[in-house]
Amino acid sequence: MAVPKRRTSHAKQGHRRSHHAVKPLQSQYCQNCSGVVQPHRICLNCGYFQGRIVVAEQEETGK
Ligand SMILES: [Zn+2]
Image 1 (cartoon, helix red, strand yellow):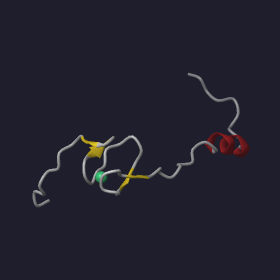
Image 2 (cartoon, protein in one colour; image 1 turned 135 degrees about the horizontal axis):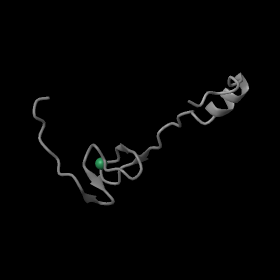
Image 3 (tube, helix red, strand yellow; image 1 turned 90 degrees about the vertical axis):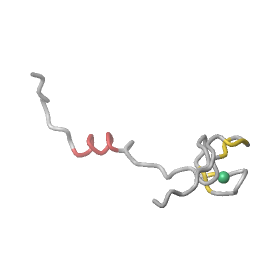
Image 4 (spheres, protein in one colour; image 1 turned 45 degrees about the horizontal axis):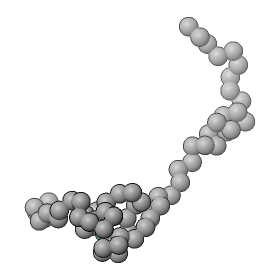
C-alpha cells in the first residue's frame, strides 16, 4: 500500500486549500416578474426562462 513519505506541511496544506473558498451566488433579475434569479436557471417565482414559460405555475397544495 502506498504511504506518504512526509507529512504535509501547514504551508502546503494551506496552498492546497487556497482553492476551496466558496464564491457567493450570482444573481440577476427576472425579465417577467423582476424577482431575483440565478443565471441560466428558470425563475422559481414565475417559471419563466428566456422570455417564455418553461414550467407552468401550480396551485399551492397546502404544504
Ligand atoms: Zn419571474
